[in-house]
Amino acid sequence: MPANSENNSAQPCTIDNCEEVGEYINDYMDGLYCQEHHESIIDRYYEPDADDNDDDDNDNDERIIHSYNYHPRASFMRSDGTHSMYVTYLDSSMPGNVRSNGRTTFTMGFELETQYVGDESFGRHIPIELLNDVNSSHESDIYLKEDGSVYNGFEIVSHPGELDYFMNHFKWKGIENLARKGFQAWKRPCCGLHVHVSKSAFADTSHKFKFIAFVYKNRPEMVQLAGRESHDYASYDIKRFLNSHRDWVDDNGKIIRHTNLMKMAKGEDCNNSRSVAVNIQNEKTIELRLFKPSLKTETVRVALQFCDALFNYTEVISTYDILQKNALTFPEFRKWVTANNEKYKVLDTRISERVKIKPTGRDI
Image (cartoon, rainbow, N blue to C red; front, side, top):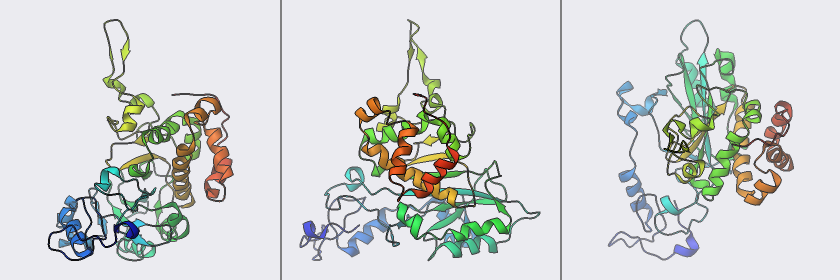
């Protein structure tokens, strides 16, 4: 990514004997680099997914539906409608190892599973039309993957993007068109809608703790908002999330907890099972697995607005707010969403329509 020009102009490229100005920093090596050496470093250290060696069509780029393990280089979708291969750091002038030290803007991406319900297998032209309808260039916004849980269907995977991109620039009509071509999502129990949010965007451990805790603390409201509850795919069981099978009883009969939510938020431990409402197993993202999928893409936009709203809400609330004002309860979150209706109108409307539960003072 380009470094801050005011702070880094006139500094030479870190590479010995290079006379060009160092304008770029990257995730792999410290220092400032000219564009040529920066791109060389990216190409050298970026490791293609194993699927890149797949023999299908003898060229992975030509595959329409990739294997489950396919992970292309990210195309970050920005609020202004542009794409970049570089994540945006809040402090672009930060020196040193930006991977471990730099906080990024909040980005998220969705995985939407859909299944063909016609009498025969779907034609190759359908996924091709989908890719052409949504992408401005080759896999710029979405790509398609196989999924073991979805027979005769596929998973639509978006690249990471900022909320404004999804709301103002993403071409949702291409996905909606699948419904009239024999595909379903909402009525198919094998399908799901997952949203991945960037771990590097969180302000600190406390911020991450509040984000995760909110979902598990407010299970009844979350089930109504998300449209489903599945013990098999997205369990709200906090004991399951905290790997309670590792707990033990000491000689005095006291239960000793193997871990706790704060350790999980710090990254010192993670859930063993992926099939929980909030999955933190991934290195770079937190995955919310709780949403019922739909080809009526307003539902996807609700999920994205919820993740963005919860991220921003849990950053601004304090420990005092939580202890004295019940800030970590759904009713308080709902008030905040309504106060920010201009940004979260789709979410605010869905909450008003679906979430009917009153505050109960629940805790986890």
